[in-house]
Image (cartoon, rainbow, N blue to C red; front, side, top):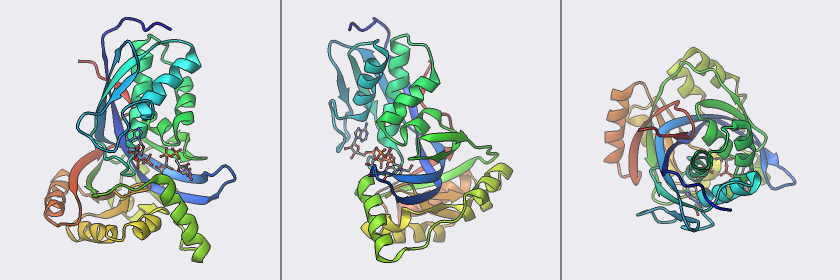
Amino acid sequence: MIARLGAPVRVTSPAKINLHLAVGDLREDGYHDLVTVFHAVDLMDELVVSPAAQHSVRTPGVAGVPAGARNLAGMAARLLAKRTGQGGPVAIEITKRIPVAGGMAGGSADAAAALVGCAALWGLPPGRDALTEIAAELGSDVPFSLAGGTAVGTGRGERLVPVLSRATLHWVLAMAADGLSTPQVFGELDRLRAAGDPPRVGAVEPMLAALATGDTAAVAAALANDLQAAAFSLQPELRRTLRRGLEAGALGGVVSGSGPTVALLCTDPEAAAQVAAEMAGSGTCRAVKVATGPVPGARVVVR
Ligand SMILES: C[C@](O)(CO)[C@H](O)COP(=O)(O)OP(=O)(O)OC[C@H]1O[C@@H](n2ccc(N)nc2=O)[C@H](O)[C@@H]1O
Ligand SMILES: Nc1ncnc2c1ncn2[C@@H]1O[C@H](COP(=O)(O)OP(=O)(O)OP(=O)(O)O)[C@@H](O)[C@H]1O
């Protein structure tokens, strides 16, 4: 395989927050059936994909992310080449803004960006459906990182239906000092359920209704995540982070996905700036960012 000569392609890809995450029982294949509402926010990783003599992935200045073939972005480039029989080695450089192991689909965002970037570099037809199939092979969250916006995910989270949303949501993201491993958090939920069946989040409809009407307070009231109890069990200090965010004036809050990032929903950008300032000085988190959603999925940046 020989890479086509082409100018480097720059791609952005969003983080996600699960506004609603209902987790079913453990399946035989080791996954759990989900019903989730994904929401993409403008906290973006940025990838530059260039033709090269051999595959490489670099994430300058970021610890805890594999550099080579084990990086999800590199895996995505190889899988796309394999499935299409096109393309060749690429050098991928990632500017990482999404927290690593933060429950915001950072690795999935990079995988989706690599698919879009390589497809553009290799001159493959857009074929979003084909890309989505390949995305699902790479991870449960990758199809949503491609799609972006607001969507209901079912199956392992890879089957998507777009959601009508009139809400622009303003978030404060409280990042924790240490990450959480996604399989470990699912395992902890299984353990908690075996020990006493903690309450499960209710139906998804109130969240869908709140999004359809654009009622931010109703969205805040409907935020729910079955993995939150497991994340609290593994990192008890997250309870304090969430409580502090609500005291600071957030309308509502939830652990994002498998955590440990805590997503705090605010009335407007001014309220978000105020809550962010309070959280930054609270000593309950490592770092704070503000973000807004929904935004599109992985996209080539045209300058
Ligand atoms: C927690 C979420 O972020 C919510 O959107 C996702 O469910 C996780 O998606 P992801 O990180 O892309 O996860 P994958 O790479 O597909 O799976 C990693 C591991 O998480 C667990 N896993 C993941 C998805 C799912 N529906 N059930 C699971 O039990 C499995 O142990 C799996 O081996
Ligand atoms: N491009 C990448 N960015 C971040 N982590 C990566 C990447 N490629 C591989 N990894 C590995 O995947 C692990 C999980 O990283 P990631 O940041 O995707 O977690 P996450 O955001 O909690 O995932 P999710 O929300 O999809 O469950 C990391 O600890 C790292 O070892």
